[in-house]
Length: 399
Image (cartoon, rainbow, N blue to C red; front, side, top):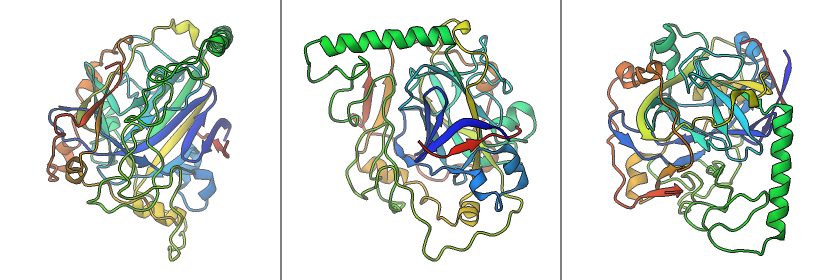
């Protein structure tokens, strides 16, 4: 197995070229209607497969990468906050491109575009399935045909999530870095400003203080902090949103990962693990941005890639000896607490049109049955408008 240059920093995956990816827990949307962006409820813990080589299936060892625990029908989104340089990032769900619906490829492509453009794309909550909308990523077991992979390819072989990054080619990267140095020099020589649009290193505008977390470059808004102590399922989250601080109903330690229980059951030898993949849930207002660079600006060789295995909570405990995060927060409790939902719009970016392949993917309820948890819509004013309106190396494997 080759080393990819991918590393884990806390729960953040760092791919070569400055790409940062975190997996964020969230509220699951109903499968009808179109909704604002759901809040973040903390990070999923991420572990290297190779650290548990004697406890995971041989197939996982062969594919390498990392793993994270997820509940049946739990929703997630991918945060790209902290990405430091331009990159084209491919996101696969069972080796089906979440942007184009095409089979996994070893190079960036257009017509249709098969990657998201970083750091302009601050996050991705689901597959690009509508005009200005995506359908939420929702975890389901393999074997039912409910995954995106099963519906698009007719079989379920891979599961999990696949990430592959491409940097700018040498000439364009040198040009971009030179422009950033000049911009930084101009900012340093400019008179100081305060409030909305205050200068930051690199010359990027910042978010207004309050509401949407600490000031960060608008091109890469912050995701919620790490999850800490287990949270009662009916209680509102301690932190969440797309970076917005929440009332400290259950204080969390940002970036922390729960330690194994003192009485945790020792990990047992490898066995056939319950395989998980991603299907889709409800629709939300989110654009997948069209690349405004020529395709020739990007390197044709990937800078790094990683396979992300999705593990059921019982398997996570068996393999790692750690308890999985608590089950997702109750949706009604979140809404009743008046905690925020979000809407994000970049007036200078153009939405990428969905392909017929992804438009036809059906929600997981068609396989698993109706969602019996009642839906509580955000109240007027509860939706916040955003923007314009070193760890150990991770080994790659064969996949």
